[in-house]
Amino acid sequence: MKKVLFITYYFPPSGGAGVQRVLKFVKYLPQNAWQPAVLTVNEDADFPARDDTLFSEIAPDLDIIRTPIFEPYNLYRRLTGRDASQPTDIASLENKRISVQEKFSEWIRSTFFIPDARCFWKGPAVRAGMRYISRNRPDIIVSSGPPYTCHLIGQALHRKTGIPWVADFRDSWVDWVSAPKRWSIPRSVDMALEGSVLREADCVLTVSDGVRDDLLSRHPQIDSTRFKLLPNGYDVRDFKDISVAEPQDRFTLTYTGSLYGKRNPLVLLEALGNLLKESPELKHVLRFRFVGRVDGQFLEAFNRYPDIIEYIPYVTHAESIAYLLNSSASLLIIDDTPANRGILTGKLYEYLGARRPILALAPEGEAVQLIHSLNAGKVAPPDNVEAVEAVLKAMIVQWKAGTLKGPDPADVSVFNRENQTGQLAGILNNLISNSI
Image (cartoon, rainbow, N blue to C red):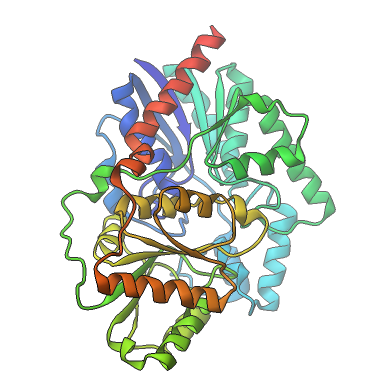
């Protein structure tokens, strides 16, 4: 059996969307004649979210190499006066009501933490990786980012050992949506690191064409034939053995994930207000459910509709899927920025796996194209209240008539994580064959 070493920051007990891709690859690669191992951080790392239930998906014999990591978030909390018991999510810095202390900490982050705030992990991870490689000699290395420090670790191990290396991009890098806004000198350093990873990796995987195109737009000299598309997906087994009782008395629209900054529900809430003025009886028909981490300013907005909006703080992955399955429709929000038009968020594939119709507030781009191609739901521009109101009203009418349908299971099966891991195995096999 061939061996592959994954490098990832997000691995159980980390929760959230970032953990799923490598976790599922590791889960299904053994049935494709690949034995995985994982190089990651200690269990006490400062993850934005934690989900201990994900340990159940890890095979008992999986080699997991855990290393210490210094993370600057405790210092950030002291500077900003935030509650030390709360996990710090970089995205929280998008809050418009940012304080002077937060502005200063963001300047430090954008100036000194290159490529990201996990940069201090590189040294311990490379040393641990070399010790593992000296004993086990994997056939290939796969780094998955963000954080992009994972790619620098993969690059260092590749340089030291000559082992083929795959850089897997779940997001693009420089100037991407969640990246800090760097000034000229740190940005040029970040650009140089990004370019070196793209040049030296034997293969670059991306979850969407938009991520690939964004990377190549800054480095047009890179050989684009080394790029392979491998989208995110959903695991059929995650949806089994969940009690499903789709609500019959209320149209229940569910959003799972984080809401912050420009990714917000305010246009939807304005459309809701218009609908209620037109048809007050809908107060007894509608339920909007938000599951996950939500910025405080949006929680305040939720309070305007206490009989309709239900907020559930972060839950386990299995509980999140249960909420989706026990809904009439799923809500997707992608704010309208040029970079976001190339986003195919992992959340979208889990929505497809839930097979509920999707209400997408999203700009024209890959996500909208995919929804249309699968006949998976309705779409409205995220900043157009009238359009959002119209599609919401249309979905309610269809729900009342019993004609509101989700995507065809046969059409979405291509995004099954088990099938996608088979595709990854094929890519790894080809790289090994070409390197011999």
